Amino acid sequence: MKKTIYLFALVAFGLFMNSCSSDDDSGSDSVAGSFLKIDDNKTDIVLGIAEDYGAYNDEGEEDVYNIDLSLLSTGFTFENQELNGTGIGIYFEIFSSTPNKLASGVYEYDANAQTALFFDDATLFEYTEDEEKEFDLVSGTITVVKSKNDYYELTFNGVDELGRVISGSFSGNVDYLIDAEED
Image (tube, rainbow, N blue to C red; front, side, top):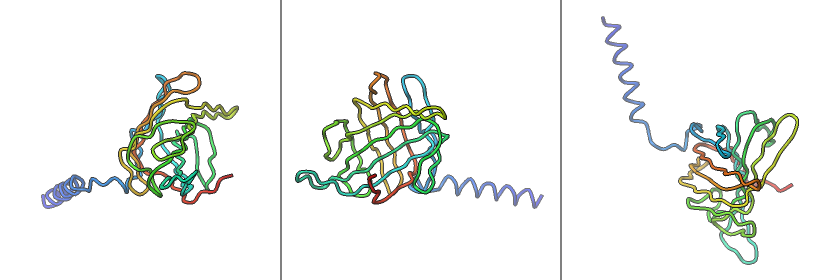
């Protein structure tokens, strides 16, 4: 009987502590519920990579920072700052008004804009063992709901060069590369 009461108290305490945990998701590694949808085909996103290229000042623009974001399905590995494997993913070149992270807000696609709250490049890619296919987005938006440290909550939508509707959502930590160098 004593063991039953002890076990019950231990389980109740564990449940209580779990329910009282912080709502701050910045320490979470989870990307549960993250997805990339191409027309009606939905793929889970399991990995996010942010590459910080730092300040981007073109023709007097101030407070513009270039951060590239890649969201990837299973099948990819990212080791020693190198991406390998097969799967589906999407890449965005984004310009933020905040250093070292994407500021909250709505980012619009414009191939010619390199100012804050725009992205000028987005590529959907499908890599198999036999071939690598890449498709540029021709329109779209990214909505960053929350960004804290290496944690992001965002949604995106657009249309690729084949006319396919692209949408998705990402919530989780990203592998963050600071001061990435251009090739």
